[in-house]
Image (cartoon, rainbow, N blue to C red; front, side, top):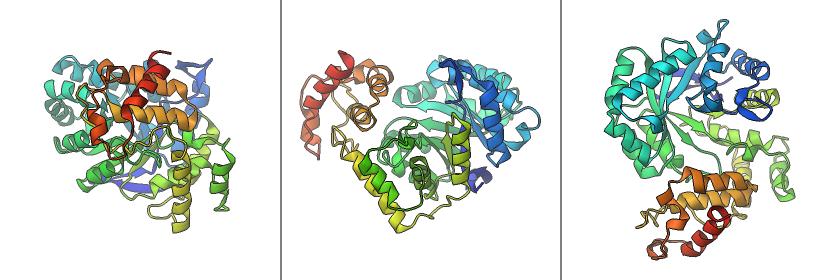
Length: 380
């Protein structure tokens, strides 16, 4: 296992972290963790050097934290740093933040949480935290010893990300990043911005929810990967791409089988920063170009179209629309458009004023595509 110094904390964390969000389950019920399979998987990873275990209040129907407490028994607590997250969307008062933290300490059966994140930060949740005095809460939690390091996980645009980074002396952050999403949300720009300010950077969705790890590939894509002659899997390529960045501290992987654990452990033992050759970087760039050749909307997430006068979240809508085109994942695209986005942010809120198209440097017919999105996800 390779280790990296984690920002200003100085901690030596394993390049691979275990995310306890996609554990094996019983009868397809995500709230029922198959502990007979999941516990050996996580302990196997720890035995081979993983020292960062990530969970959160809502994972596996609220059962992930208590399961992680069982993982940490038998001497395993001393081998890992535990991370969990405040459910920001549930906060109604300053006292709620303290209450949830205390409940999480009980669930995890620990006296201290090593890495504590404010979960799923977007504009709405950020306003909740600011209005309820998140700074005082984090200061109290650190002073009392209930948490060691304070961070946040992020799901919004780059401008808000920078504002948040500069608003508090954070020790770390968690962002979505993979070779298809380098300009999405915080992206590589945010990764570098945070790292330059001493924050440790944790990567989530390195395989885009498993989509970049698929082994049944179109012939054209398989031919690209085969050019290297290494026999590396698509997952291996995607993880190596991220570990090549020296700014990356920990990559979280939500592993669901022992085979995935072993493969990721092997990659994590080899993939040092700046280790990809020019020809390997070219192969990844060609794979990325292949995916982008299949997208429906040539949106680069430059965000010149924002803000929409009606509040429509145009880049996020097109990201989901393109996600289905790339991977055939209709369910996630529909959820993103009708569940993740607030009602006023959805495509159906467009009144065809055309302000976005006047500002779009790609000359995208945004209004037409938004109508297509409404028909596909909101009216179906």
